[in-house]
Amino acid sequence: MVLYFSGTGNTRYAAEVIGELLHNEIKDIREFIKSGVKTKFYSKAPYIICAPIYAWRFPPLVEGFLERSDFWGSDKVYFVATCESQTGDAARYLKKICEKKGMTFMGFAGVPMPENYIIMYKPPKEDEQKHIFRMANSELVSIVNTISRGEVLKDDLDMKLLKPLTKLVNPWFFGACVSSRKFRTTDKCIGCGKCVEACPYGSITLSDGRPVWGEKCMHCMSCICGCPTGAIEYGRRTVGRDRYYCRKEPNITWRYKY
Image 1 (cartoon, rainbow, N blue to C red):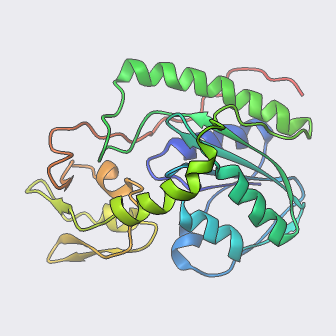
Image 2 (image 1 turned 90 degrees about the vertical axis):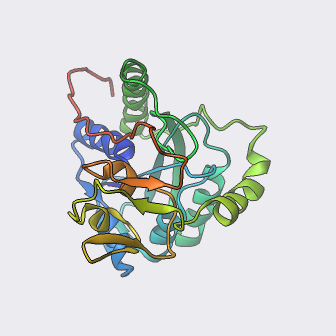
């Protein structure tokens, strides 16, 4: 079973490629996360958990989901992360979760994807995106081959020198950088409510047809990048900046070896 969380579609794409090649069931865990209810899953095949990297770890709400969920059937878990270039020490924290739950950690691998954190960075242009996806597809096939053979995944993006910094950078990022206060809408807003649906915390509400952001936020970029009219801004940082949302569908035309 492939379980995934995705903010702007990169991880969804990766999870769907993996699921289709392995003929595994694929589940979006956003609604399970939003509900906060303890969930039970059953899978004969190893679990494959896919999520983006935020400040060199899986997002807090994904780690929390894993800790409170029950996984029946297979006791083996693989982890696949999407990121721009670095995965930090994410694997160590996931391994600890597996140990607490009595599950077998089958490794972790990072897959480079187009940059989507538009609050700080410009997303790549279309030609560059195509190149990144070609590289990502190759990496995903390699991951599927490893899982098919029952071998342990290895991460080529772990940046060993950065690992010790994860325990400092991650809490600093979420404490100093992540806030919902600067989100706002322009006159382009049509009150469609798609941002309300997109927020994994359920922290956005509509008031007089306009979104209002609550305190809970992790900068997943679901609202600002998923807005159909480009009506959401984050202070002045995003004004005039392209949005990024992966709507690419898997087109499995390659072969892979077991």
